[in-house]
Image 1: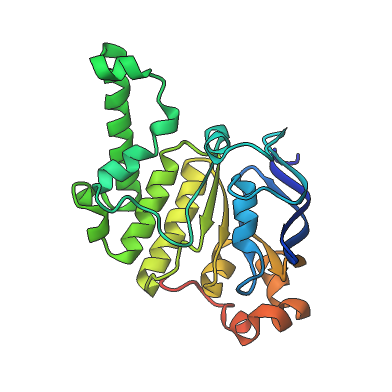
Image 2 (image 1 turned 45 degrees about the vertical axis):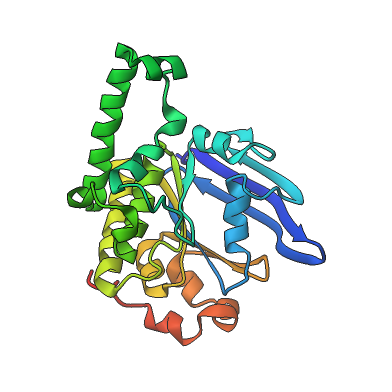
Length: 267
């Protein structure tokens, strides 16, 4: 029995003047998948994420999420539908605490109205209590509970990436997009991230799509890969299939692909 389809892109393209960043992308993602989107710098990966999440309007093509077209919807609306993301360049509220950064993620899910919040009515108080409890749970999940009162900008780089994941989870996603989550992490942190991503997929029944340049991390974590080069798909398949694809080796992986055949760092 086939799995429920969450995301479908058909002929999705993005052009900036005379530059085609993504060229007629066909892509599907099913419920429960842990997939990767890889390729050299400038291949169109982050532009693809921006189109998926409404930050960049496609020049052509169709995009469906949970069976409905989402092109033209605001990023906040797509997030409310159940798609969340992290960013290649960390985007935290540096002056806020770790806990407060996670609480920001609940904003689009609050049911109480403005008046209820101002008057501290019982309905809002109960919702606020649940929000705080869930925020602490998410920080525990990513290993940051002991740092909940620290300012976000006091965290180490790898910890800031984990905080971004916790904040994205606070929005209650069904699909989580991770843009280079292992960037700047040491091997021990990367191994912990791999365990966390698998745990999130299994425990929270998430579907996860990630962009990453750490090929050892990708090859040992993702079940399926799509490879972009100059905005075009040049390969699809399992990590083993992609790793041995001549077009991929020529375009991107090279000797690094062969080196990634072992275990993930620290796994």
